[in-house]
Image (cartoon, rainbow, N blue to C red):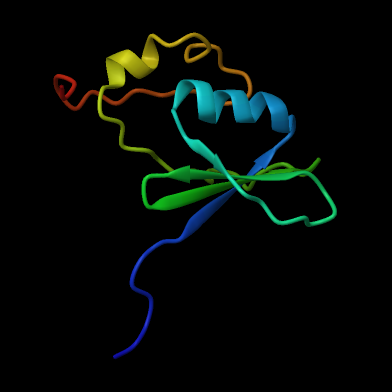
Length: 101
């Protein structure tokens, strides 16, 4: 039966778009991609074959809303400048064994 075959993007509320961009680009290594004009601040980022869409809005995200990235070396990501600063995002680590090299 025809239907959904994958996930295209995740939208994230960002209270400070530039600070959020620094986190996603400098800490997680996402790549900015061309973004259409929506009439309010929006930036699209490439994460492998998927995208993260950051929207600067005053709204609070829904309670317990979340998404997760798989990274190739969690220790290296965690040691990057800004990774342990919980603003605007909190990097939570779940031990899944040694980092892949």
